[in-house]
Amino acid sequence: MQGDVIAKKEDKGWFYTDTVKEHFFHPKNFLEDEAAYGDAYLGMVGSPACGDAMKVYLKIEKDADGLERIKDFKWKTFGCASAIAATSMLSVMVTEHGGMLLEEALKLRPQDIMLRLGGLPARKIHCSVLGDKALRSAVNDYYRKSGQIDKISLEAGRVIDHVLKITDHDIEEAVLEGADTLEKVQARTKVGTGDPSCIPEVENLIRFYKEKYFGA
Amino acid sequence: MKTNKIIYLDHAATTPLDPRVLEAMQPYFTEDFGNPSSFHSVGMRAKDAVAEARGTVARLLGGHEDEILFTSGGTESDNLAVMGVPRYWHEKNGVLPHVITSAVEHYAVLEPLIAMDRKKEIELTIVGVSREGQISVEEVMSAIKSNTVLISIMTANNEIGTIQPIAELGREILKYRKLHATTFPYLHTDACQATGFLDLNVEKTHVDLLTLNGSKMYGPKGVGVLYVRRGVKVQPMFIGGGQEKNLRSGTENVPGIIGLAKAFELVQAEREVESARLSTLRDRLAQGLLSIPKTILNGHPKERLPNSVNISFIDIEGEAAVLYLDAQGIMVSTGSACASTSLDPSHVILATGLSYEAAHGSIRFTLGHSTTEEDVDFVLRVMPAIVERLRLMSPANLDMKYFA
Image 1 (spheres, rainbow over the protein chains, first blue to last red):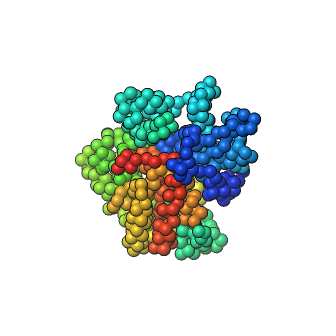
Image 2 (image 1 turned 135 degrees about the horizontal axis):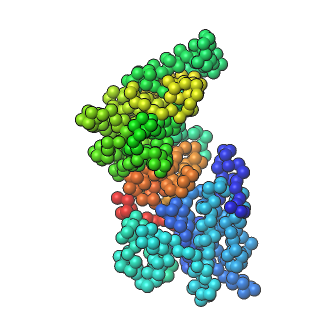
Image 3 (image 1 turned 90 degrees about the horizontal axis):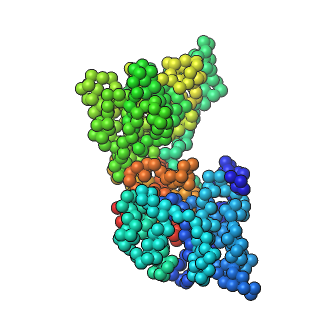
């Protein structure tokens, strides 16, 4: 993979660089108290079943020049040390120097985060890929709520029910159409009837989309 | 809080060398360094020492000296058993061999079998396990066909510590063979994790092949045993030199073999006392950890190794917890995806029917000689805060009703 940044001292002592360790043991900007944080634009990628999940809370403001800047970035991450460190580093990168311009933030690539972390072990790279995706998902939420529908860039849906090929988009749509319980979402999508193992995740998604769209 | 003391709770990964074992091995590096195949007295001394070690292992297993093969470790022994038996049988009979194994076996058993199945060298049946990780003897027996040459079921699981009903399975296989007037299927068991805790006498368990690994019994790394009952034929993997009855060529790892025999002797002599001591500590640790909310014990509540505790901490990922524990001087392990090269979490925990979410949060604590009550209490003091912190950081909040 071109542009990968791989830690050099992979097989000596600690698996991770000192920067990764610092962000893992002392994560910056993670959201302790959701209730107290107030309104934010939300983004989520991954799931605990996949081994990595990330939720992002974004605040965006226009600066003196009328440009959209990231005012605050908070997060929660389920994942290994590199996933936690990469989200923490991303939160620093987009909030330092008065906040990153939104259009710059949308250009961030996983490699940029890895560079700042001093590299990651090769097989850990997939973890930090989630950070930029979660950020884009939260920015989409902002575009939607600020009426800039044309700017929304859609990621391909992630398959939740592998038997019926139902994606997170399908569940999102069902919630938007008013299905606010598992039973109601199932009535629309049949999700989980072929692959019951995905039901915990479906419930998790329903909670997330309800919170995202209806604040409850 | 920083501490300098290392609390090593990863004895299922490997054990430190017992100083008594090191002492027994020492002369064979520099003084009695000979090649057992040499016809001079330096070689003879090495040969005699290997013969004595072989006798010790044979006695402890209740077998004969000519049934003991020394190998390079558990992986080689497992590979030699599950590849060597069907291959020899196929060569002799020209019939596609059928092998039965379980979903919770070590990869040293599962991977070669799956690869041979894919190449149509064998026909493979993988039986599932209960929620507690146990096979059903009935299910294994009913999977037997006329071409079933080998059944490979581990004695105790390396990840969740569940002990399998090997003796019962061995008895049923004996009965089957008598009833059908046949010499097979043979029973192979990987006993690496059980070495320090269970009676491995092959006359009591009726196993035909058995794997041991020096580095799981306070012995050296790089040496193992495959017990092969008289009459059972295996096709060798290492050829040229003719050592180990032509079944495993290569100059014998003399110090390793001496060390393994000494270690095996020591752990078997101390196994009842050590099992009782560790069971108490294991239960104390398990109970304490299970008092943390949203936790699940993986494995069997009773039929488990005296040194093994495996717990899923819901809503957190295992590796992160392992590293926070490491920072406190506590060494444990996880079967989670991030800690291994595969993207899937522990195949063992998934095989017990637990969801991916719970499997990702599983942590294994395996106790050993060095473990004290203070160690257990220290873990119990630091663990709740680590779990709480990682949960605070985690967006997951799964409903426990799915893990009942």
